[in-house]
Structures are given as C-alpha cells and as structure tokens.
Image (cartoon, rainbow, N blue to C red; front, top):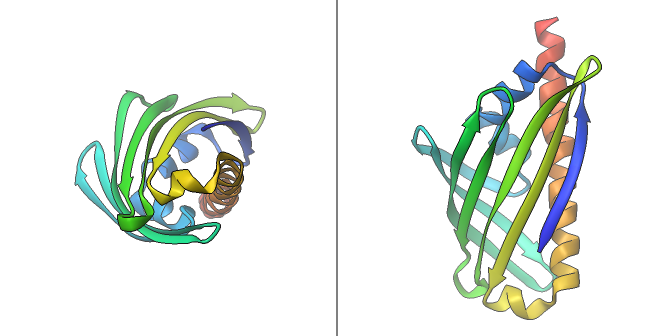
Length: 152
C-alpha cells in the first residue's frame, strides 16, 4: 500500500519541525494512540488501538527516524504487532518546504500488512489508512496552529 499527499500548515517551518519531533504533539495527533515513549534519540515505542473493518487490535511497535535533515525532513520506519490481527510495517519520507506564510508538508509512505489484516482486502485497508492519515494531519495542524498562535 502506498500513500502520498501534501498539507499546507499555517505555521513556520521551524514550528512544524519542532512539532514533528515533539512526543506529546505526535501522541495527540495519532488517532488511537494510547501510549508513546522515547526509547532513544531516534526511536519511539507506541501503543495504538485501531480498527480495520471487522478487525480491531492494539498495535505495539516502534517508530525509528533516519535520514534526518533538520528543518527539512526525515524518514520514518515503523513496525507494529497486533497479536491475532497481524502486523503492519513500512516507511514514510516527510519533507518540509516554505509555502507563503506557512509550511508545505509532503509525505510518501509504503506499508505492508499481514495476518488477519491482509485477509480483509486492500481496498478497505487503503481506505482506512487514508482516513487515518487525514485525521492525523487535521489533529497535527490544529496543534501546530494553536502553538503558533500562542507564540505570536
């Protein structure tokens, strides 16, 4: 499965970069995120509850950051286990650029699923992944805009 999109955020690139690296902002932005903790400087551990069609699971996994270009972007590699539901893994490239008074955030991601999730069908999985990404960016934009307004 592949997802590619871009979002204009009403905040400076510095503010968006800071938020992309802030544990609490990420936790608040990820739909179903129940727990997030830093393992080391470049790795997080997360617990996320998700539902895909008839399959509901609590995924426990890691998120690792690499190819870090401060203020410009990074690559995220993720792996999550959902018990009987299966697993999800993949990576995403996130890039930032100036966009008028705000910031343009672009991402390209690839993911694989296995177990019961793989049996559900790619169209449903793609739909849920797209909806989840959209919800993440709505929440993320709200937090970043709020933080920007406080800074002004």
